[in-house]
Length: 87
Image (cartoon, rainbow, N blue to C red; front, side, top):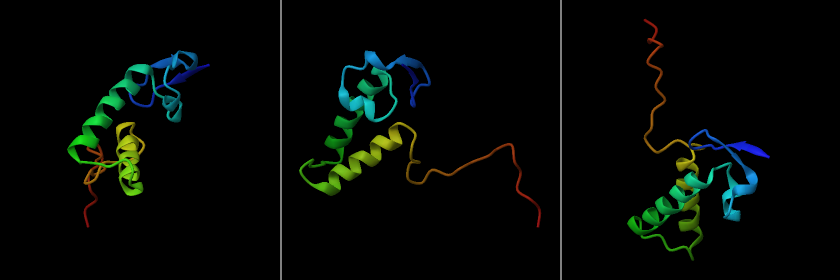
C-alpha cells in the first residue's frame, strides 16, 4: 500500500520499509535513515541515557518534532499574509 512520507511528502510503498520501527510514522526509508542519524546526534549532544524514562520521553519529543508532528520550542506561528487588526 502506498503512503506519503510525513517529512518529505514523497509517496512510498509500505513493503519497502526495512526497519519495523519506521512504521511508527509514515516515513520513507531515506527520511527514517536521516532520523536515526539525527537521533544519535541528539542523544550524544544532550547526553541522554536511554535507561531513564524521562530521557526516552525527551527523545520521542525530538522524534515528533523531526517529523513535524510537534512544534519546536519557541517556534511562533506566523502568517505573513494576514496583517494585525487595528484597535
